[in-house]
Amino acid sequence: MEIIIQTVRDAVSIKNGFFEEEDNVFAYTREFHCLPFTCYLQVNEALHLIQYRAYFTFTLRGEDEVRFREYIQQVNYRCPVGSFAYSREKDEFRYKNALAFGSERPTRNAIDTLIDISEAALDEDILGLIRAHNGEPVENA
Image (cartoon, rainbow, N blue to C red; front, side, top):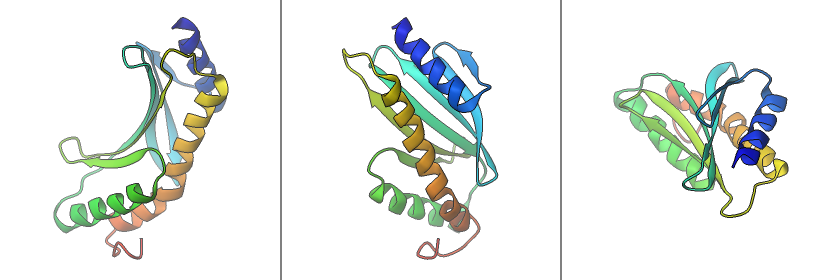
């Protein structure tokens, strides 16, 4: 498992420079269209997964929350992998994705791809999510 952890550490280091590491979690900050997201990769030994997560904290209530959740549902429907969510309890907008590796050791290329496709999904959909957050009708976002 240490080889997998080192491979994830190398991938995060090369792609993002500074990161924090604790208990198989590699966290860093990344801006998507000027919004600072906390991103992290976590090696889950029990489930044989590398999980990618990104989140941004803000508050939505009432019609804004309904519209935002409706837009998230549309985005998730067309996403081939990964998903977006909004947690009212934490006032947190999240994106999550994962790479299951079973008994095989994931390659550096597979880990890079997990990061790249996750960040591409955020980059592609964040502007529409901002428009939905700002009150635009879902069909225009």
